[in-house]
Length: 603
Image (cartoon, rainbow, N blue to C red; front, side, top):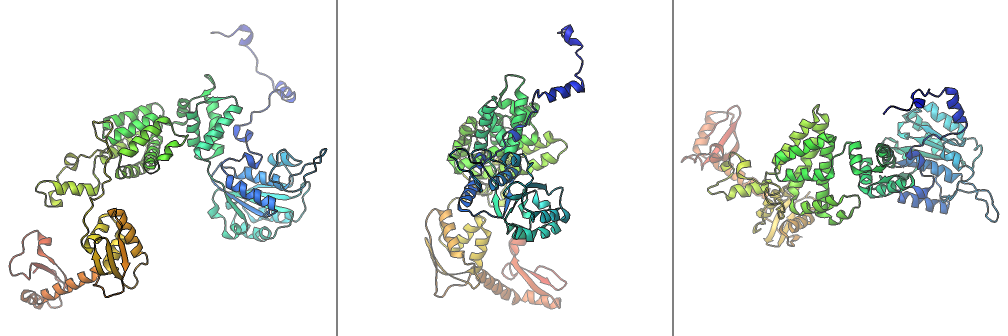
């Protein structure tokens, strides 16, 4: 439709008229939510209860430190806390009626005092803020040292706030040490940093340190809901949860994303929907992510790739899809051990119900394998010039890995095959003969799967215990049992042994806990004092020496050693192990002997 004639040639306003409107105070400049809702009191900080409690007690007891070090991730409130501290140091209220004047440091500040507004707006002459990222040298610190000796101009305390303090040079830190340790009574220091490890320990030891935590997703979503109510902006709870997740515990990031979401949704009914937030952030639909996970676990690759393409076409980034998939794998794994985690209000109803179902159906072997493949695949997708293709290949790897059995189960399947004599009988195509999808392909509600651990075995000898440690891949314990244990007595449920000199002090305790974990029954492990048998390693070495002596006395070996002067026997092994053939008669008991000294041969 063509605009009316009176508005068709509306001239642009002149600079003079714009200035006049500003001078007349027409419309105030818009303040972003992160600045508009910046806390001005300790009670308004969210997620930092431990720090607030400590500071409250310290102020009430008069134990106010001369220097504070605030650390934490971006957007958790380090600079804001520093300004609130400066306000607390200089809190003053004049006497009004029957209320006495307040002229001392106070942690509870129900209303703005004499200096509060100027301090929170970073324009008070006695609260000096310095960005160490752009003022890194000793000259900048020297100005602080020289001005610290002068008393405050207006307030009670002079406060120096140094942001990103880890950026100061080594000479600047050294120049600050003496003043930091013994500052004048009217001076306080507040440092803020995201990389506290880069701050010299000599500086850290002179400060009272507070680690500001990332805000919990549920608490952050609740805070965003309160901001939406103040801004008269309707928002779906799921949309706020998505924003809180994307912010990763940063309040500033969450408010910035909420600002963006309000602007993104204002064209319709000013309601922030989960779909709008997903489109804005390039996130994938959580329900379709769960569908993708189920298709992968059932080995339905065509469906998995189709879902990935659908999510990509709807605007989701491939790396974000894999990241969301990894988050769901973590959720399923967590629900397997902590079912109460389903009560998290930041979870969508579908995540709760289906996550709980998968946690009962999938084994830990499948979940950990999927997690590892996703972590590796995420790096590949982010580094690839063709992210969608890279994500396709990651899903293919996960889908086929879901069909493979765990190593212990694979060995049991091979051993159970008719006529199987060992690993040499393994089939040529494991994926054809050992189909083991993480979830059955046909039934939608399969029962729990085994974790792939070896079946319980009867422990009738100490060697069985050592072999059990090997099957559970506890290599450290297995080596200690072979090397440091002299057996005194063994019976099912009880082991008595003497420990070799230098044995690990944790050996008996660890063996007790591992046996209970692996067998499901209590074992008594006792350190004895009577004579003990040699360790398994000593027995093996004794048998090796005996075999070597026997081989050395063989006439054929003696003639070979005579034929090659300087040769010596370095190893003796069964001939069947070397060739796979039966040992011929008269070859030294079927042993295969190797010689060193320039000649290797078989006898």
